Length: 333
Image 1 (cartoon, rainbow, N blue to C red):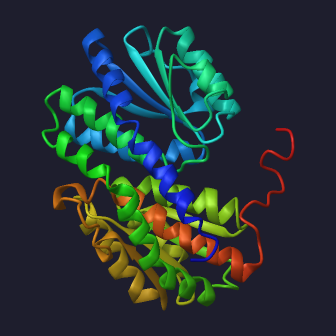
Image 2: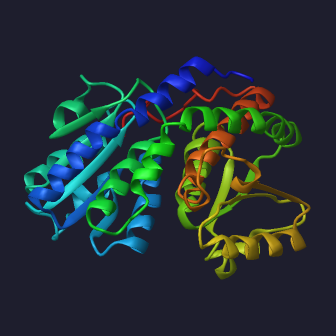
């Protein structure tokens, strides 16, 4: 596979699911001590990656669980924060300045802070009350968040399947390696067909809306300097559809939760207008060892793996490094 380091891929994923004992011990302690607000804080991609877990908790729990943009949280404040709040942060590098300021802010309000990162000596790891460290550069943070939120819901009597889910996550490295292998020819074909495409229209919903936002902004825009529109499948018919024409590249992310019919509806309309509709559907992957009832929860992880292959092939055909930036962490702002 193009630009794919299999040993590193497997080691990084294995290190995330290996955090299960530490995550369970931490969640159990927090539940026993008691808290009534869970804030999921991020910036850019790590903010978007919190949305599936806000979405899951919103459907399953009466606990106040909210995602927050780190920089906005600091300047706008949150009157509900206090000593009975827990705030979770994720950062690949452990150096995200907006998140560091948000950690200081929520700790000043009395909240307990949790950080997931790959660097034990990083500023974020040192700033939070509890740091849970994986292999360096491990991405995405979905395994840790599945374990954290799943254990929390289980302890509250709001998720009966936690033990089975957590057990199945142990096989995640092998499952996602097969996903990557299956996606490779599809990714190469998409990139070859869109070498000169300078605008993409992305649609996703449910627990894939965060990934839709992330792939649009953090990959196509930030890493490839391509123009995009991103829209939630439930909102597609309230404005953004007017941007479609027969040559528009439409990318649809389809998962397996209860919002699937909304994305089906958007896809059906998009195909009536555009001749260039690509659907990345988690149903196309076997996910051996994953129970049917958990497939929807794993959708962000599956598509992150699939689109990771797309990104590498876009880098190839466009001769534009995924590491190249003009402004992000280059200029002061």
